[in-house]
Length: 77
Image (cartoon, rainbow, N blue to C red):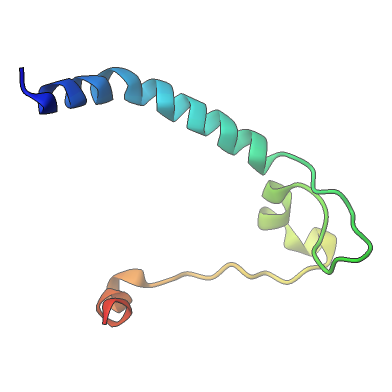
């Protein structure tokens, strides 16, 4: 058999397993607690809360929409 058939078969069989593992790691990371550090200017708390409600910790909102589609050519040049 062709090596590509084996590769696609493995992708088909194991992609859901890998995606579930990656989703679990993402959830753990986004919900872990960042400890307070008095020598740091970074806020402490949980990453999900810091992203969704930055005002709760007295920080700025750094979220912004990016327009990568229109700037793709200028980035590549």
